[in-house]
Image (cartoon, rainbow, N blue to C red):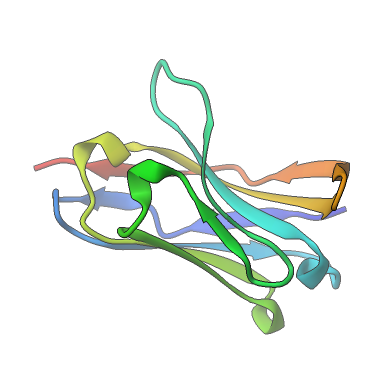
Length: 121
């Protein structure tokens, strides 16, 4: 069982920055692929960025060059540094943890409770 707790959301002006954090419980954090997803009102939840246990990262095109995902296995924490924020980035951001093999995901799919990010002047 893994519990995920996000923090760092808030209100920021366009062009500003925020860093989201997600702390995981348990001793097997380093074995999980970690992801940040977001869901805007009236839209489906979408993947924003992910980082696997080797440190390889994936970003959705809309955030490439602006967002950076990283992890600190010693602190059981994954981060999302968000720069040059736009109003379209407004959403609830969720942390995700799942195990993957070369053939796909397996085991439980863990989610945090979400943290609101609002980009507005």
